[in-house]
Length: 338
Image 1 (tube, rainbow, N blue to C red):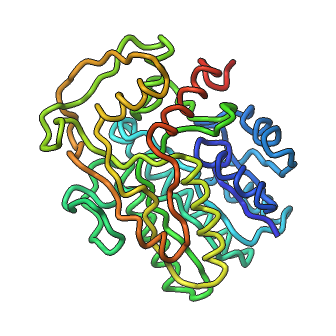
Image 2 (cartoon, helix red, strand yellow):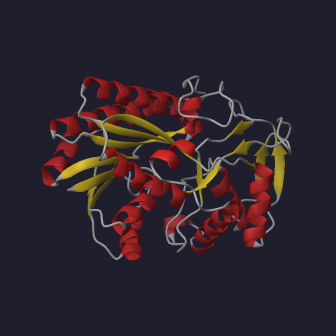
């Protein structure tokens, strides 16, 4: 039986595919390459020395999804596929609702029709919204999201919870990611955003490579030790390993389980810049800009539940995250287009 990875050519999906293959799992990847590149698939094979199935498919396409489930014996799904740019979601909310929510509903319908009722869902710390104090725990009230992207994650969590309540055969893990950065230590796969990066680390690495003049730091007057925003950065390989642990856990229980995947340690923007400069030996010029609407001063996890129940803990520190991110960008200055 195989694990279906939706969005498996993406940043987190590709790293998770490697961890599953290295653990001896059979996988099937589907992706529509909206925000990813076919080259990734070759590099996954290169890094693991293993073959796997791939089908180009959009999760909104029920007919195509049915064909995938008819063709392969799939017993579980790790669901990454979705649009993920916060700014774009504010400009195109209907696209985000149609793709992320509509696509997930279609996926669940097809899964149920084929008797596949195990899902690991790629959620986000954005579901905690503005009204919770860090460290964030899984039992806190969620909602009050600040953008349509975050709202799609919140709604999908509710939908999957309702699906589980309606049918006790479902086993669902909701994994709330904090801020994944870094790259595979080989420097062969990593984060390759389209256009101007939305996230801090790829912006820093592009500045380091001379592709951008300087980093914009949005706000230096927050109530934090140095005035810049604090986030819980986690190495993408640690995050990927968390999915393997969640898959193992889901085989032993039914219902919905929720886990934070973070380090439990917050780093400010300036601390990340300093760590990157130390790891890379490259100076990062920056400009202080006004705060962005909806940005929080501080957001970091309490990951103790995942450690307790999944036997998972993030192992890589901030300098390793920075060194791996720089190696990826330096070796692939134009991402997968090189």
